[in-house]
Length: 311
Image (cartoon, rainbow, N blue to C red; front, side):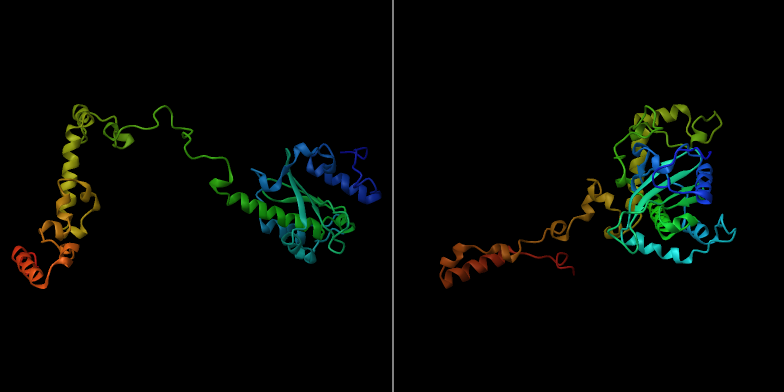
């Protein structure tokens, strides 16, 4: 990167040591053009980026506080710039973009002035390595010449938020993935249960002295004969696991052979017809003597055994 490098209007006014430092920062980024002259087609919205630097809050603090000033060779210690988090929270950071270069990531944005909201927005940018280390930064404000300002820090806070969002991105934040065939599924995506070999992969190819099924018996299992016997044995084990029907597996409730024990007592004990079902509107037309005779006939029919009464 030489002094004849084409610069944008945002930094064309720089002269002397400030221009030399800006050209030095461009050489550190490895970019072939001024960040302000990059084509918009090469930039990606920071919120939609699928890959970002491994940037964390510690990297932000290290750059703002412990980075060395190229002018004084002392730590920047820009503690006041850490308050720029309020700029990010207030929504003053807009149009945040990201560019992935060969040597790292370039992040740009527009940030409102802290004292003049209606003035033209400032344009900070930062360049980071893949591991999250901030190489350098710049801003079009006066303090931006000193490598760190509130606007650069606000941009770093926006980047920190984007990196966290990318790490916490859910399946609904991207294209639909459910219902699609697995990438390594091959041709056999599904198979009937009776045709699946549930043996350990290392035991599938067993020899004559193996304690596992022989090849002949395994073929019988796939035919279903031995499989049905094993299933029936499994059902019996479930049935014998508990004496109280309320404590038994719910699977037995849908099996005809075992479902009878789950029938309500009103069905299994054959209880007589409930009294509320004896009501008939025709009985309202009967006289008192006729109604008394019908009651006696009904009570003769009704019969409740000690077993039905739970005695």
